[in-house]
Image (cartoon, rainbow over all chains, first blue to last red; front, side, top):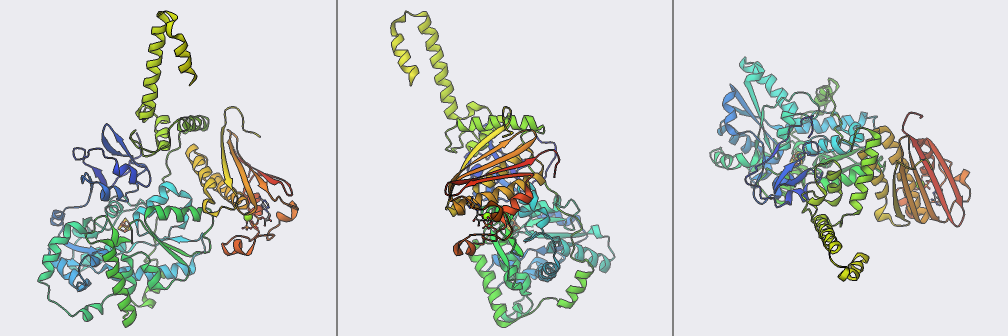
Length: 454
Length: 147
Ligand SMILES: Nc1ncnc2c1ncn2[C@@H]1O[C@H](COP(=O)(O)OP(=O)(O)OP(=O)(O)O)[C@@H](O)[C@H]1O
Ligand code: SF4
Ligand SMILES: [Mg+2]
């Protein structure tokens, strides 16, 4: 159907799917159709948000993450956990316990990504101070948000911040340091991101910016949760207070929506989470209503990465845990972040800069020829006007409007709509009757005319 | 009107003084233009102009009919409202001129930039108005060059 191929982090297991259409209705970009009783994903529309994974009652939609066994392919392995991992466990488990637990699990080392996040927060501040381009600047750490812009808001591409994301910077630095330390090649150092969502797997395999990723794989938080919990039991305990001393407040904020703006104390920023909310905000940006805002922190998942589809803990609880840590660090004025002067120096050396830009990936128009596209648009409107407009989904398209589009694109038949099928059936019945009455005596002709009037 | 025969025509209604639906028609127009495959730069201009025109209807008129008409050579949008009308069009077109109320200013409107912005973004703009009755804006964007 489409020649440009987009890699996706979501796959439907056909034999488990029983065509209940929950995924089709929840998909924010109308990327799912049900054909012959099975859900399919339209690749060019999918932005990998994972809403379908969460809603499918059969568990038929599965994320593609890396199995644990991948570790053996490398001579030295390093775990780089998302800050959202910390939020999965009880109050006493802090980064110190997590990083040590990961080492017990079989990684040669574990890297404190929270510190890198804090460095990037400082960099965001510097960036916003220098920024001369279109406002507001949009945050890029959530790959779903970047993909939403590529597909549905290409005119906002220049709003995306051109700083690299912490996980990639961490991957790059880990490879550099470890290869020097052990005299190994960079490709022998395996960097594994512990991910709250499948889309970050995708951003490793197919970065929006078309470059290469410094991460070698992504392991799902839900896969590692159980083993990590037991591994942490044998980690030597430190007091809560002592473990807190090493947490960079600017970095821990990355796990929850609004955390960056809050810890940086940005005055003119907005924080949004959830695709439907983001769509509202992006419409406003396109209409020029938000020019006075400096920075938009946007996360596809409710409450930010703590609500990722591969997390384990209820997102309200995990959000709260992060919030409490932030409040405590604020209260105790703990500042375990890198020195701002050092960050400024790195910033000036383009340590944080993103070399490439995400490219627009707009949906294909109805036709590449303008006259034909206009013609199809007319047909689509006509079809839509003839439909019951109740978005029942029985046709296998999420709305009457998308169904009209599918018919015009020849991806569906008009009689796939049960109402149209009924009309079609009535019509056939009438004409069959007509044929019969034509041959019959004109006995019941009056009746027939009456019927035709209605 | 340029749009006849093999063009695409669609009508919308905008309810004046109803801020909860403000911006919907311009979003729909933008989506139609995208589906048809109009160049992004033209879409952007058309979207900004439609949004400003729609907001003026919401703020200063009772009701309006919006007609989008797309031909092979141009996009034409007319905004025909019933409402207070504009007494002095020349004045209204000036940057900074606004009769917005305090309430509207609180919502971020009333800089007096809407009409000038429409003029800047459109290839052609015709305004006519009868005070006390209503205003008609006719905005055109050419598809093959020009501006
Ligand atoms: N459709 C309309 N009906 C009646 N009056 C209008 C209409 N459109 C504009 N006006 C008048 O013209 C003035 C200037 O309009 P313009 O769009 O340039 O600025 P504004 O709407 O006041 O502020 P802004 O568009 O910057 O929020 C308005 O304040 C209003 O008095
Ligand atoms: S909000 Fe975070 S967890 Fe959710 S998709 Fe985006 S990056 Fe992944
Ligand atoms: Mg205005």
